[in-house]
Amino acid sequence: MVVEKSRIRQFFKSLSNQKTLMLMSLPFLVWVIVFKYLPLWGWLIAFQRYRLGKGLFDQTWVGLENFRMLFQDHHFYRVLRNTLVMSSLNLVLGFVTAITLALLLNELRRVYFKRTVQTISYLPHFVSWVVAANIVQETLAPEGIINNLLLKLNIIERPILWLGVGEYFWGILAVAEVWKNVGWNTIIYLAAITTIDPTQYEAAQIDGASRFRRMWHITLPGIRPVIVLLLIMNLGHILESGFEPQYLLGNSMNIEYSENLDIFVLKYGIQLNNYGLATAAGIFKTVVSFIFIISANHIAKRLGQSRLY
Amino acid sequence: MSRTRSSVASSFGDKVFDFCNYIFMIFLIVVTLYPFINMLALSLNDANDSIRGGIYLWPRVWTLRNYEYVFSETNVYFATFISAARTIIGTLVSVFCTAMLAYAVSRPEYKLRKFVSIVFIFTMYFSGGLIPEYLLIKNLDLLNTFWVYIVPGIIGVFNMIVIRSFIDGLPEGILESARIDGAGDFTVFIRIVLPLIVPALATVSLFVAVYQWNSWFDVFLYNSSRADLSTLQYELVKILASTNTSHLSPADQYADAMGGRTRTVTPTSIRATMTIVASLPIIMVYPFLQRYFVKGLVIGGVKG
Image (cartoon, rainbow over all chains, first blue to last red; front, side, top):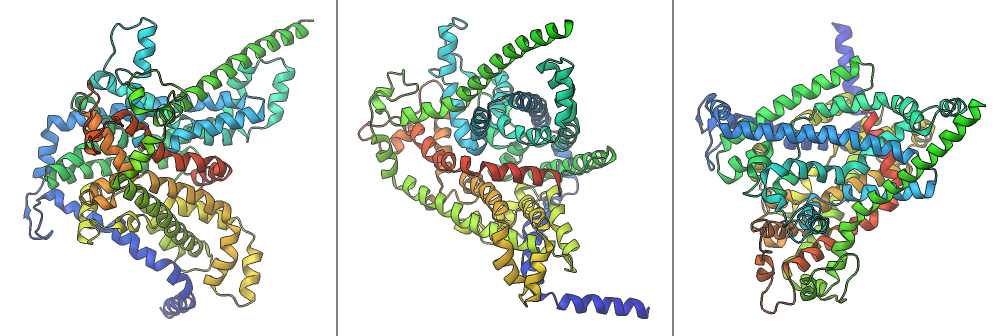
């Protein structure tokens, strides 16, 4: 007991010697509590019929009513389907294209050319989705370059309204995502490739293995741990299909396919003032994501990898 | 014998492979750059001439009229100023605060380092969600203010991890010798740590600056009733929305809204010009910071 007490005293004594460090960090602790933890109180809204202008505790409590409504809503399941399809497409295409590009970049022998391609390939990642969405719209416009090209090649007879047909939306979005992020996503694989022991390539070359076989049997297995790790971590974000591209490229003609969970929340919450239902949908998303991310972390650890986040 | 033959064969295969690879890379460059070059050409071409079509890589009738027109609009003029202000102020504030926090939690002797780190890192796993965050901003009276662009983003946890792992890599001797000379933690941070972690600061600054410059959702959500707090990106969202509603006929709403008095501009030329204005600053900066962000991404991705 006495030992305990003196320990606590010791703790506070050394803490009082660290006033500067406390001044340098505790204001931000207040910030994080206000901006990141305090909104969690807002989750109570999901159990209320929330009206603006009244305090959080003066609202009508409705129990699980909002959740019941949410899970009975056809609209919600369509939105969930769109979210899952779009994020799965992103995940698969994002991985395949980034790994392929990294492997091909690694085979370029002229350093200057390789650097140039890399720098250019990062460009779309840095521009906003607003700019990218404008580019997509311009490219796919009736008089845009895609329609012109297809018309010239006689593949189509009249211009296609690409963004006006719901069925095309997932494909357009997937291609746009690849265009925007493929270069950026190669960075981590290229960094992993540099850690591969070069003597392996020399040995393979002496054995007469072709470039393609060297890529397949040395480079690809060499970066497998990184691929597995990133794949697991990305599975944790399966409910994050993005918000901006769907919102910016979505319109009344493709809404059946473009609307995802985040847009659903925005629509019900801010536009229709149904705060309870929107918050319930938000909670659903956060809780499922939380479970996915924690399990992803756990699996990654079990596989003996370091955690990503 | 057979060995020589196979190596000859493979070297021929290698050449084919190399050739295809170069072709593919050139295709990639074209696909990436073409839309930007096309937008640039359209923005520098006479608006009425552009209607004829056929503008691809180079303007046919050169003019700066589109730029003059766009910047003569008061909302675009203000929006440029606000975009620049939020990028500069937001980046300076966030990078300084994040670095300071990273320094504090990197000190092994700091008794609260574990606690503070965990409280921050845990926030990477959840978010309050749109509605509660909106109501928080409302209750804090940050709606319709400039500060709503700065305050919610003061600390970036990912950035904190990047800076912290950089500080951890500094030789302990340097910090120790400064402390023996009687320098306090704040002095050590400002005078010694900050100059040594410039590469990490460059990385993080790029991330924050790009985020700030490209943001439009916070403008839409919190400040859409204040035209004087709009940003370039949000102005571009408005143009996009006006073209989105009617796909068949090119929407004239924005061009009309911008003053349909004399049609020296068209929706296409305004859109191209705004796209260039909204992306040019970033395009000009990021190639020079490539070294830094590649390193920062790898550090931040693997540690933490």
